[in-house]
Length: 458
Image (cartoon, one colour):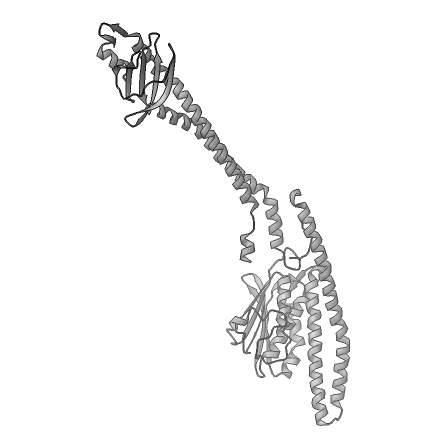
């Protein structure tokens, strides 16, 4: 189960990952292009200013008896190569490559034709520099180099100025995509919520408002629901018919056994007849409970709910059950108060009969069973308490399952009573609570129903 859940793929996550990845590639590409453009623009701007002192130096080279020299005062030369942020150096070489002036640490200039200039990168004392070099018509070569501080600063400023809007647009696009994808997937969420809110027996088709992209899935699912509805209907019909058909022969068999028991028969034959009668009674009750279960499963689709009072249902039971309680030597009492609700009177009556029957079967002779109705915080409730052995805490979730009986429990129950009660409670959107009775010390079965039910189907 966990592995299957871990392998599920989120459409939203896939869309967002694809979109974020695409935007990341676009931003990275824009950053690269912007960097190259910024670097080229910066070099174009600063290279022109770097070439100016080269031209000035070449124009001021004089050739005398002592050889060639730069005919510029020292201050003028320093002013020519002065810069506030970067270190600027120069070099002048003669026709044969000999050093005339400047620093010898600049590299040998590249081969240049007369009047030709070139810009290139180099290093000076371990720091990267940009160099402008030109050869004069006389064959002298002047080079001026400077470090890259102001160039790098300008490149960073251009990058920031160009990429900030790009990043803002990308972030806005991701936010809009997140919102748009969430909004676009809302119909899927509606379908999921509708299916999650249904009971296992609600096999109505999904509404046709599902998105066209999942229409084939919805159609296939609706077809499956249709087949399940047919199968469920056939199963319920078979159960109801089988239980109904069993009731007549079982009732006839029970009547004949009771007539035989009134006749004078040998003791050993009477014992066998009594065992047969007891088994027939249990089979009849099982058939009746199966029929009640079939009605509970199909009733909400057949009959609408109506206004009713739990007190009236309990008052009817007060007339039907005292004789059986007296026969079992059990004190059956009723503490009734108005409890208006909406429901199916036949099913609510069947639920209460099962609760009373369960209590009478499992409470020892001399015990007490109390039925109460009323309102608790505005919610109608029905409660059956007894002085029986109670239901262990670890068994309370299991006893509402079909045909489940607590090991070692006395009584001739079939394990369907509380399952029928649970089915009817669920059909009415109510709650079933099993606990220990604070009054009698035995079992307390409390059913709470909504004061008003909006829908009759789950």
